[in-house]
Image (cartoon, rainbow, N blue to C red; front, side, top):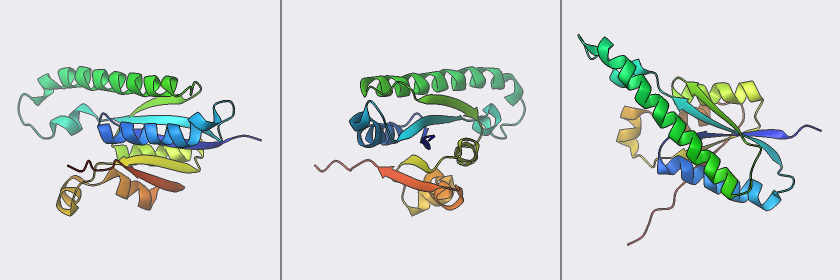
Length: 158
C-alpha cells in the first residue's frame, strides 16, 4: 500500500520553519523507521516581476539581479529544510522549488502529489495586514483539496 502524502509549504520565515520542525517532530521523528506519510516540502519562489512590481522605466535592468537573489534565497530555504530533516532523521523527503505565487503553488502541489494533508505556518498577521497582504494559509484552507493544518508559533510571554 502506498503512503499518503503530506505537503509542507515553506518560505524563508521563522514561522514556516517552525511549522516544518513541528511537523517533523510529531509525524516523522517518532516513526523514524516507518513514518506514516511521504513528505514533500515545497518552496514557492516568487517571480522577479512580482517582487519588483510596476517599477516603471529601468525595471527591466534590475530583473536579472532580482532573479539571482531569489535563487539564492530558494537555495538557502531548501538547505535549511534539508538540515532540519537530517537532524530529525528524515532522509526521504522530497524537496521542490516552484516559481509562482505561494497560494497557487501549494494548492497545485496538493493536486500533483495527491496529498491528503497540507501543512503551512502562520505569520500571525492581524486582520488588516491579512487583508492587504493576503494570507497564504487562509487561501489554502479554502482552496486546497485536502485537509489543511495551520501551525502557529507560540507567542513568547515576557
